Length: 232
Image (cartoon, rainbow, N blue to C red; front, side, top):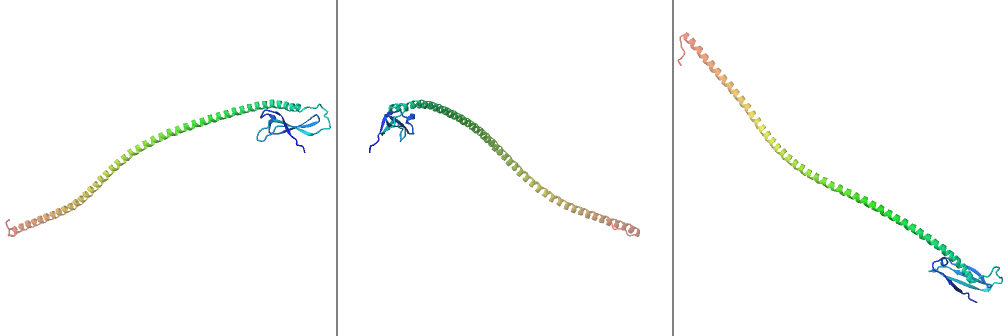
């Protein structure tokens, strides 16, 4: 049994349309023999070689059109390759343009993002500055409040001292008033005793006067009766 062998008839540049991932198989006839032309494919790497395979059986029917050689076939294959290559270049240019536009958009987006981040940073810095100023102001207010509180505490202590002194003075006055009340009560008792003594004295004087008057009256009657009172 005969073995069919592929032959390399041409090589193309890498990464062109002919060396694409998809394998292409073309049939051709030359001198009554059938040929298969294969190119493209990917098996871990791109294939940039053009292969031909001569079939063992000769075709009985002659082609109506002019026989074309394998080289013509390859040329015909390579002509589309050239066109495809040009189209590929156009596509590459278009892709480059698209990539450039995408890069420009990415640059614009990056610039916009950077601008937004800068604006946010400035806003945050401004907020932090305001907060710091407010913190400083609050610290000053707290210091003033503490100073005022210390002053009021001193004033309160002074007022408490004065209040304690006044309370002591009031207590002393209350003691003095109580003593005076006791003295007044004693004076009332003395006045009553004096009044009683006065009354007793008046009564004694009145009794002595009455007795004297009685004695005087008895003496006159004694003269009249012939018995004069005793000489004093």
